[in-house]
Amino acid sequence: MATLNFTYLPGDGIGPEVGAAALEVVAAVAEKFGHDLSVEEHLIGGAAIDAGLKPLPDATFESCQRTGAILLGAVGGPKWDHLKGAERPELGSLLPLRKRLDLYANIRPCRPFAALIDRAPLRPERLEGVDFVVMRELTGGIYFGDKGRDNLGAYDECRYSEAEVRRIAIKAFDLAKTRRGKVTSVDKSNVLETSRLWREVVEDVAKDYPEVELQHLLVDAMAMHMLTRAQDFDVILTENMFGDILTDEASVLCGSMGVIPSASVSGGTTGMYEPIHGSAPDIAGQGKANPIAMILSAAWMLRLSLGLEAEAAAIEGGVEAAIAGGHVTGDLGGTLSTSEVGCWVADHVR
Ligand code: NAD
Ligand code: IPM
Ligand code: MN
Image 1 (cartoon, helix red, strand yellow):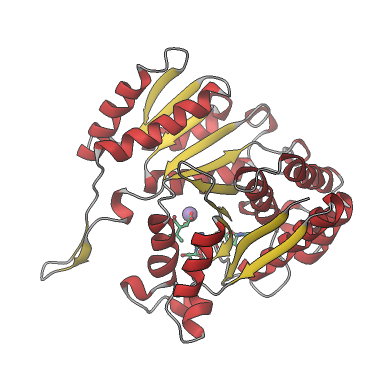
Image 2: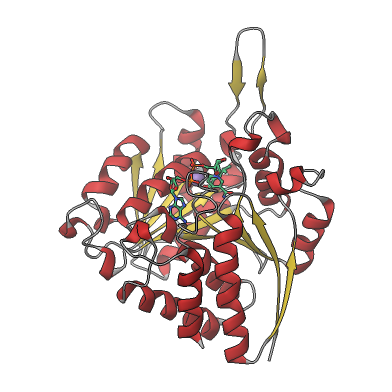
């Protein structure tokens, strides 16, 4: 018997809706496996701002640091778009949280569920057998460079150190060794100096992995290859912003923004787990949000930060069954609400 102790950050928009569904499932897991549940819920992003606090309140950060296991919904939305720089939910909470915990490796899987292949906008033969993981660098690049305005306009600096590239490349190659042994490194080395460094360092890391095949692609071409021959990819290694963009594209292969979870990790067991989608202001408050990405993120938290493999697998089995049986939200062609999907998966787990 264990205590499931983690920090829960619902955030903004659909964050609290998909979060409640995921908590329902985690509670079912605790019940079934005889664990105690210790959820530390804290404010973040716009919700914290509205409460008169900083976007990343000290108590929130301290809890994250203490538990080392963080389940986050989403932050941001039109209500806070007038704010500038670090006053914004995204720049003032999500980015510093990733940076301060050194969660430099963001892992985003793309494996379309069999039952959804007919629903995707691409032809089924383009989706059968698709199974890749994007290894996105998360704490460097243009997101974290010097940014500002001057009398000419605005600027965002993009920097990568050799060490930053090396450590994420090692993560990608290590992962590829446990999979089909292929790394596709994505950059813009025909234009960007950071990409030229990226390519050099990735080549160097590859020397330590003779059993892994390395290929380089330019990001614009990658955006096309992902839709035309996604089956060819195993581990896609890329810098911060390209990984952000390519994974929203990857969600189209999987049927919805609402099904791809993510794990942000570094060396040890500390991790933050969040869906790749945002706060979806267009559907917030309507019970329409698909909670599957958030539920799967909770499963990854149990597996990677709490070391509970069977519990994680039980959640994934429940999600698989929900999708196979059509117990899903409207984005996947179903009729259930967010909370109904959470209850269905929780019941399946029990
Ligand atoms: P978004 O991901 O929130 O939404 C894009 C589209 O996908 C919308 O049409 C939305 O309805 C749909 N969608 C997203 N999640 C869904 C779900 N679970 N179920 C069904 N449909 C879903 O992206 P956006 O609209 O560009 O951004 C909205 C806000 O979210 C912005 O403020 C942005 O900064 C923020 N954001 C936050 C995070 C995060 O906290 N990790 C991630 C992305 C965007
Ligand atoms: C994501 C989001 C964030 C990112 C934003 C909200 C800063 O789009 O997690 O994919 O770009 O990393
Ligand atoms: Mn994104």
